[in-house]
Amino acid sequence: MKEFIRALRFLCILIIFLPGCISQQKNEDDTNDEPVSNREKYLDWFKDAKFGMFIHWGPYSQLAGEWKGKKVPVGENAEWIMKKLEIPVDEYRKIAKTMNPVVFDAQEWVQLAKLTGMKYIVITAKHHDGFAMYHSKVSPYNIVDWTQYKRDPLKELSKACEEAGIKFCFYYSHREDWEHPGGYGNDWDYDNDWGQNLFHPAKFRKYLDEKAKPQIKELLTDYGPVGLVWFDRGMYTREQGLEFVRFVNELQPTTLINGRVGHYNKEFIGDYQSTSDNGMPPGGLEEYWETPQTLNETWGYSKFDTLWKSPEEVIRRLAEVVSRGGNYLLNIGPKGNGEIPDITINIFSKVGQWMNRNSESIYGTTANPFGELPWGYCTVKENKLYLLIRNWPKDNKLVLSGLKNPVLKAYPLNNKSKILNVLQDGEETYITIPSIAFDDPVSVIVLEVKGQPEVLPQHVKQDESGRIKLDYLTANTLGKAKTRFNRKGGFHISKWTNPDDAVEWFINIDKPGNFEIYIDYSAKKEWKGKGFEVTIGEYNLTSSVIPTGEIFDYKKFPLGYIKLAEPGKYTLTIKPSEQSDDFLMYLKSLTLDPVEEIKDEGWGVD
Image (cartoon, rainbow, N blue to C red; front, side):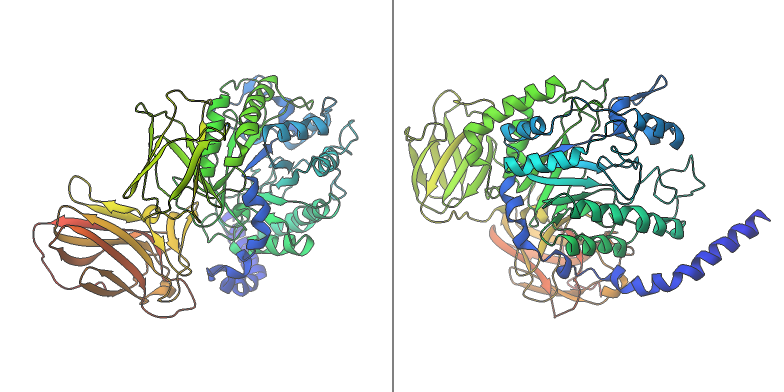
């Protein structure tokens, strides 16, 4: 009987929601996201800012990682304590009622960010626990109506940010909500089975319509200009993510939206990409990105977590992230009473001192054009290269390979009158530096060059076995082709729709011979038969796409054999054979494996 009722219930759900699912199918499969993401002009402030403060603060901060003698282990997220310890909603509501952050001072928080060199603040307006840290009219479950505090911290922060010239932004958990019966995640209080994509859609729709969207509207209506909305945990469908994108765009068109607004396993639809928590891409992304990282192991305050990053580590991470083309969003977890731990203030103070001396090498810069540098990092602004030295060379010489521009002068950023000796010999540039580092933990040298800096392309070398792997990191993209990131798909190349959208690699062959070429990609069934061309040396090879299954399910295919008889430099190019309305494929890599002999001259994967 129970099985019959369950089947009947599921059938009713399908009857109610199948028409909507069908009408959404085109949007779900539409991976050409230009109409959503073509908002480059709004990213200017974000690209210049580079450094932001993330704040996780809520009732979980009251608990500080412990409830009724049970602890959230260090290394796990203290702000998840309600779910990890399965605290009943009624119990958690009582905890929330005791929140009284009498120590909170918006001016002090904003000044801490400003003195550290941070240009924007992102604070949790509502985390997964469902509690609003602002005066929400949508639900009484908020810090003003639910507690004795009776003040709106976000209103005060918004005002303090405006006065200090800091961008005010907020985090909002749009899918996850453990307090609302229709929100995702609470299966210990509510009769919810979250194991399938189509689970209680009526409940979830009710949550979106009566809580999530109305609260987003409040935050974008009553708190002045908002720099960005930081969504978290994705959505079940791409269309649901797009719904929130359109909603935010209608309310405040200039407000940015992070990449976690949509389904994690679908195409990116925000204004910029969010890496995984504490993620650090090795570089090479051509769409703007941000990494959220935390100052210790957890995000919300935990009295047990003492694994703090040193000021030196924070500075190095900032330099590394910016040199790779991204923003560094560094999280703090205030205590439940609104106090920022002293150790956080001490760390930020030392970071701020370094930023005060060296911020010119951070703000408004673009990524390192040289690839990995053994001594540190590089950023670029106008005709200046900023060389951020992490490991001081023992021979007192910095070496840059591939700089095409004549060097006009070089000097330490903190002592511009001290001119350094520079020698340019062919593709190599040598800068003689002092014997002792002049700043800690990263010293900055400025290289002024004639014109906009230009760098010779990197050549991919064979490994010891003679093999060559070509991926996004060393790719040179042309036209609309882009190197990208996705939670499921990882780093890949896509957005190519016609023969002008090509990808090329420059290869250095010092072990010539026979090679078998493999291609590793993902392709939907709709892309079956799309033609593509691979060109290298005297070979001009054609093939066509084979579907691989679900989006970002990669498979490796042999393309065939080539013979590169002479050592030297080669260019390998891959591009679509013809115009299309959709992407060619999601390309992971191409590899050239050395083989003893060519077994088959054919190039057939058609």
